[in-house]
Image (cartoon, rainbow, N blue to C red; front, top):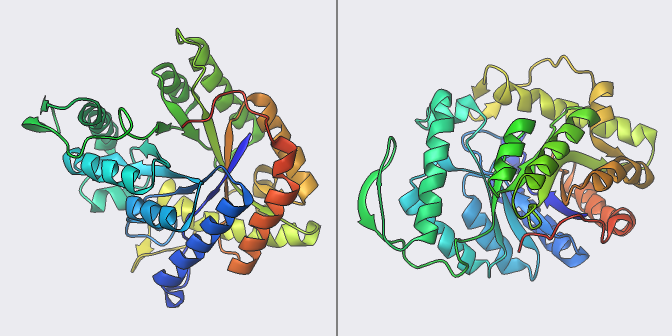
Amino acid sequence: MEFSIQLSAYYPDKSYGGDRVYNDMLEQAVLCDRLGYDAVSITEHHLINILMMPAPLQFAVKIASMTERIKIMTAIAVLPLHDMRIYAGELVCADIFTDGRLMLGVGRGAYAFEMERLGVPMDETRDKFNESLDVLQALLSEEEVSWNGKYYTFAPLTIMPRPVRPGGPPLMMAVMVPEGIYHCTKRGFHIQTTPLSGDHKHMLEQVDAFNRGKTDRDDGGKDLTLTLSRVGFLARDAADAKRKVAQAHDYYSRFDNVFTGPGIVTNGMIEPLPRKQTAEELGESLLIGTPQQLIDKLAPYAEAGVDRVIVNINFGMEQSEQLDCIQQFAEEVMPHFAGQTNAVAAE
């Protein structure tokens, strides 16, 4: 089972400066590269101070310029926000500039505040995503493409330069609902998913859907991978874990506002809202604890067949603590799962 650190910029204090936020992310990426993590992952979000990354492909190129071998994964790129005729060319360039280390996770967008202010109503995101994905795949795999659809109509054109890798970077579908995971896997997509603050049972349902989708493919889905994202952090002891869970609970009070809540945002800053889930309940579902506790929590993931775990440590802790966590996790947790994978990693 492989591991990735999610470089999900959190910006609770504007005075800290966006330059410092992204320098922190770059410092984390360089350390991950040195310590043998499989990948770092970067989000795409606009207009808000959580998961703040309006330029993921540019950031991927910057990361590649400062690292040697680590994969760089979008988690996720929001296709309905882009014109695929432009995005396909940008993607080919980013794949070249990252020396073929780019992995493209794609999705339809999850925050109504963000999507609707950028001109894509939430009730249109599914249809626009589906058509955008079809257009993108056609542009990357065929030289002369024309289109006559609901969202795209254009005469024959060819994206230049052509992809170095046939069809472009490995494509990963972001989907959380188990039946959606099943159908996307059956179609031949790598999967990115997360149970968010859900329980262990929900995670197992997601993994089961992925495994069923692989089984129902003619090739058995032998090359497909399942990547699962969780908020996590190492702790010294119970008191330290409680402090970090409390910080994660505060983070989720903002995350929930834009994900499932009313989307109350003032000058780019998401307002915290009361949560029904207590900090104690949240702590049970997150990967926060001592190295041995995290090994115990991660063991069922490896046993279930998860190929890669993305650990999101960026929920408000100091940069020094985050770097220490990355180092300690690599030294004390990752070795227990070396070689434990049920699928060939996406190349």
